[in-house]
Image (cartoon, protein in one colour):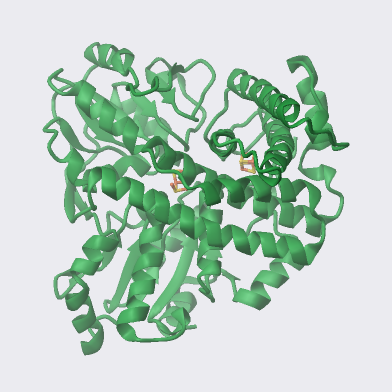
Amino acid sequence: MFCFQCEEASKGFGCTTKGVCGKHSTTAQLQDLLVYLLKGLAIVADEAIQQGQPDTSVGRFIAEALFMTITNANFDDARLEAKIQAIIARRDALKTALNYSSNLDAVNWSGTPDQYNAKAVIVGVLSQMNEDVRSLHELLVYGLKGMAAYVDHAAILGFEKTEINTFIITGLAASLTESDLQTLIGWVLKCGEFGVTAMALLDEANTSTYGNPEITTVNLGVRTNPGILISGHDLKDIEELLQQTAGTGIDVYTHSEMLPAHYYPAFKKYSHFVGNYGNAWWEQDKDFASFNGPILMTTNCITPVKDAYRDRIFTTGQAGWPGALHIADRPQGGTKDFSPLIERAKTCAPPIELEQRHIVGGFAHAQVMALADQVLDAVKSGAIKRFIVMGGCDGRHKQRSYYTDVAKALPKEAVILTAGCAKYRYNKLDLGDINGIPRLLDAGQCNDSYSLAYIALKLKEIFGVKDINELPISYDIAWYEQKAIIVLLALLYLGVKHIRLGPTLPAFLSPNVAKVLIEQFDIKPIGEVEADVRAMMAAA
Ligand code: SF4
Ligand code: SF3
């Protein structure tokens, strides 16, 4: 195996025997083959578009399959094999319908599951020998994976855009067939542009379905009923879980990236929706053990399942873990059936309390705009001197304490804007407020990073500046998986410069590709806390 798609790639180079994430080499190879064959399907789907006979459901099919391969989403070889078979079947049916032929192996290869691993070795990441082409191919594919996650979430709520699906198809095809560096850089930047569109679509899907997130105090303590813990990013899943658990005597708690579900008006009516339990994804083994009840993983991030809760963990959607009971997709017009979790919860003890306190969040764009006058006054008076965007992911690396230290070291005139699980590095600190505006504004999940871009664009209008980089905003982003890559590409597309990216720069950036990003956008690695804080406050 060779995988370097996330920030925890072994030795900052790549995982070669087993993933730091726990991914076995067979799983990594199945994912490689899946992506390779998906590129073949994309080429045929692109041909269908060229012939004026687009397959209207293939874009979503590709997005779902890509989503399965993002870091920590699906470790289940049987599901990956089934998806590979489905990709081959879909590709061949489309080829037949179009009467299309091609010499490309990805468009023609077919095999049985016992041949998958051998084939994957030949077509994996390292099959591209030119390290700059490989770097741009992978940057594009990882951006598309992140976009695919957003697209899938939006589609689940009934929101799709043909142009985004078409971009995923053509971009994926280009990641196989294109090798000109300048053209590939163009694709990567275009990926950022469609990333903005996809994030806006998901924002529209979430807010029109569940209302605009609003300032919310979230309980971190527990009650005495048995509970179900729901993690990941899928809001439709939590909606149906809340509906199905109402009146059963089972409480529902959020974990990690599901925390922002509390901010949506639609979920506030459920009296058994108790609070948030535990910390960021990478500490789940401790949190899941003490939770005592069933756990539902709706998306990434799953870590290797421990015996302490092995018989209580369930997956759904694109998430998968071998041996975990998988809750099937909802039938057309129907709902998922969460009764296995509910029945399991009835046999469980209530959660062990980890802490007794509250945190405040819900500062997505509508809520921040509702405070715009207050924010503007604070900026004009100098009470707020700078906004620091610290969104992104959390992870295991010790260097991530940098983000806690930055949050603590920022002067009291700085406001942190965040989204994603990166917030767990500082969301329990008492950072106070500026004239009633909290110094930590949590917009929501990584999926809600659109809010951070939206707020910046609105501030640009309000302040009447021409260049987004003239705003009193600095970016100190933490990344881990591929959704952070699409957020980064989206920010670059919006013209944001001087982004600090950490805790390490991506292993998949070749020196030459890194140089392009540094020269064009002044992306920089994080440095020493005091120096970075000083520089950011001085707009550097
Ligand atoms: Fe390694 Fe990250 Fe790939 Fe897992 S996803 S195998 S940790 S690079
Ligand atoms: Fe986190 Fe996995 Fe990226 Fe959604 S839950 S931000 S890492």
